Image: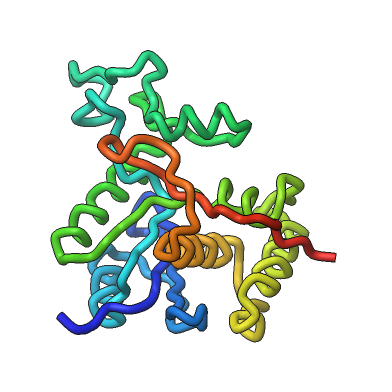
Length: 220
């Protein structure tokens, strides 16, 4: 295996029928990959080709302690009274909305896929961390976020990301909100390797990494 470099952010979908936005940055925060990949095998192939040193996935990558699955027919039970993961309970305390990882979740397929992909990447020797772009955007851009599913929200993200990552600005006109989230995930990986992220949660159970910033980026 060659020298690893750069960071890949993945805005993972719950099924291979829907493409996942993927964006790669090098250590100078220049764009080295941008695209949509459907199959896990395609994602693994891209990671192997570019030899990313860190992969950041926007999806829960672990289960709460005590659970072996998310099936309501299974007898496994979470250890914590809150049922979700500790990282999710901590985000909720900070006023950050999050979909909890419980047996009642409606994103079960996404969680299972994220866990499978993490395990496969780690078995190949890659480091994988979990990101939550919504929380990262609050850290980076402040709490007054515009809904990313609206045109104004996408414009907001493009403007802020262009300020944060000037080398991406010439390409960002074609981005949708999924690629914006993949960009934030990749940037979070960059900050992580610089020691500029905060770990939210329990490393044994699964943690989310959020940017540590002194001055959030503000767009005029």
